[in-house]
Length: 211
Image (cartoon, rainbow, N blue to C red; front, side, top):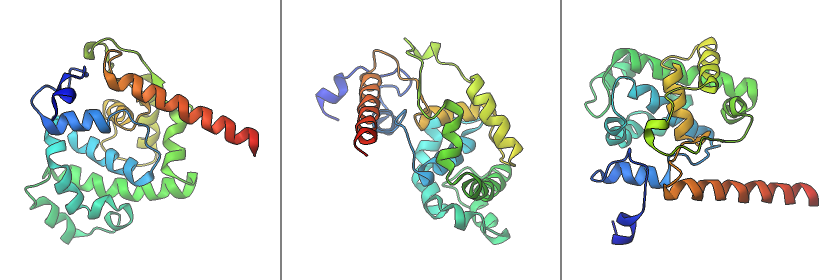
């Protein structure tokens, strides 16, 4: 990391000595995601995190990609007893039988959601009215662990048969995929993401005027 990168003011949660966490914070966390495959990846990873730290999951992320066919929901939905045994024997992922079973179940329900709503993107973003919520927090201590929106998402996912989708997990998912911008206002990413969104909104407005 360059001196310039080190000097940037960030949210406090990545810490100063974990390069992978810093890169995740700087490049991914809070950026609006509308790609179904990426949304599915985060849904699975956030469920795997339950009871653990995000650092643990982030360190295992590449292992998960290899073990789960790069988070291909169609392939995961067809996993059988042999695949379950393979995953439970893999030290590179969280070897929890309930979480492994939930991964397969969630892949199956994910495909049903896509069929019902056209895309998982269309389904999940409806819970924030199609645009990110900005909380403008001053410190990580001000960041909620769940909100009425995450409560609603959790209830609906559970109703659709998903597992490991409690409100706290759902809120972490919402933060990760940019459904909410919870970067601290002094963090350099807060303004970057907000500015990027304004640019997208203006471009969409221009497109509608000329079409």
